[in-house]
Image 1 (cartoon, rainbow, N blue to C red):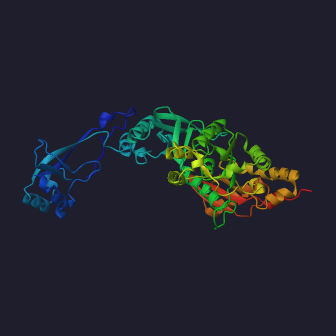
Image 2: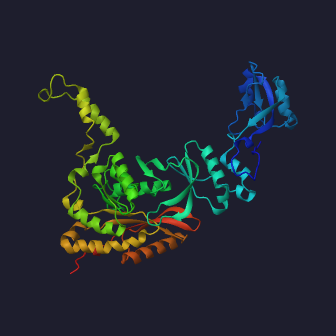
Image 3: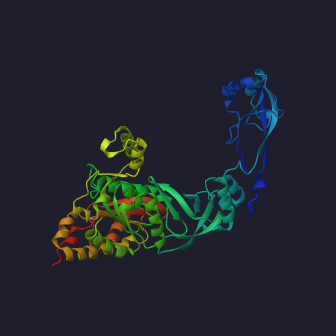
Length: 485
């Protein structure tokens, strides 16, 4: 049995009461003690009512104890085959009529929208959206816009964790990446909390860029930083603490998880709203010692961060390994079982005092700080601004040329291994080989140099039918720090 709600193609304001429906079905009145037996009977199995959210065994209308109604998929007794009827008679079952009362809450969002949208739109009803905190973010095509508020209300009703439904408008802030949006239903509340990569992010969804569909990409790159350090093709043990420069950091989806796992990060974004919330996220996730935040143009940041990392590197204590929750728990347990030295405490001192003081210990000596020269070398640049990031590759040659002109051979020694660059971009070349050639060609033109070392072109996701997002990873050319005499 397939059910559909009542249809009203002219509805523009949602009328929930309209979707009530009475569905007549046949039921077998049976003895309650035989319920399990009849449910398992092979002759009945394909005739028992099987509908979402509908129980197929209910009490009788008069509530008689010892009796139950077994709901069947037939609208009338005549629709039941003879062998099923004979079996029910042998079990002293009586066929009766029963009514299912369905209302708005029963129907799915897709069913409701098919009932109110024009037939040509209903088959592809727009029930897909991304979730960011409590916000459902839709991207409705033009043909659905006349029905957008109706659609938004249905989405809000049918997803209990959602409090706000918004639709992306065509107007996009090209400088700061966030999109203009219209509230379709719910509260106009845009400050959200979102969990990702064992971190909690707080942000204003209306003023900064955030895309929950990139969670896997965030994790992929952070894993690469922490697993292989400056050598993405290595298969050996984890590298020393990596130093990362995030050129378009947003609210910190790369920077914060990387720092939480022990990396050192210079994080930048031109949007002051983004860096404001990144500061909140750095503090809330307890990675303040390992992240420095700036609000600069991307090219200026590349130039500055090379100089800053060289002249004012992070202090040694930033390189201490953060304790995991398990490690902190073990440390507290050890403190409880270790006697206090008599000379160090009074007779009133207690284990609780010792544990309380130990709560503030969040680091251990762990891996020693890297040598001074390595602490000045940036291992990775991340450039997650797919619309234009490739254009900013022209900043690297002058940035390193300037550093080399000041410190000469020492720069070449420190940067014996050049940084990796991970630049996100779009392409309309759909074939893998064509996409690779297009991306590398554009990157080489912007960089002003051939890209040949540790080159990886990773497909991130399909953005539109004729548009894909990729991440190009490569090592900067070593001659960027060669003597310029």
